[in-house]
Length: 312
Image (cartoon, rainbow, N blue to C red; front, top):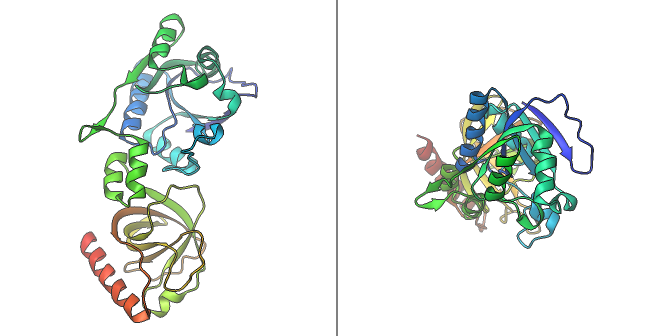
């Protein structure tokens, strides 16, 4: 997959780019509804002998437009989004920098710039996709434009679970509530986080629970603090683990951002500096401040027993 970064204010020189069947949208999470849109674009590319593409935007429009529900963190930050799209078989990713100037484009100018301008011959979006100034463009205006121009268009109906539309907003709420199993079901793929193992205070190994302290590199939307059953992928191998996302209140009082540390089950290797991927599997319990080390260790023993049973 080739990623091409574009900005509205720049001249796009895409004369040598092939005609494409493209899916368009923000696609945070690339959940099951998004996947249906993207698969339709891939299928059409095959049928029409075109290359497949995804047209998406960064940052989230709410960041640029100053909305109250600003999204500065993501279910799938850019690197994860790229990896998933590549795994789906997309040929080209057009990554458009979202700006106030772009937000102010009329629907007609948007189509000329980012549909015709990117040699889109077939376009697929979700039924509720909007574009152009104040969201004036929608599936109906795209259908009208396609009837008069050199591209065809299809809108994909909503994908539901339990009679409710699958949406990034719904999944973010589930993640915020620690309901990572339900979130994973709606995503249709693991909810993951990738980071680097760094040196911590090494207190865990003194109480029988050595942990990998993970520096979170990307702008992930994190679940609520607490203890989780997780998968940990290290050098193409996956291990079961128990993770604590939180502020370690038993040992420190002044933390302002949550730490992520993972005790990897049946694992005893030095992995400092390694990049690891954590998949959130199940919320186990809230983070608690213990009165002493003995109480903490006793609870960790119970956590390990519960998590081992979960993976058994």
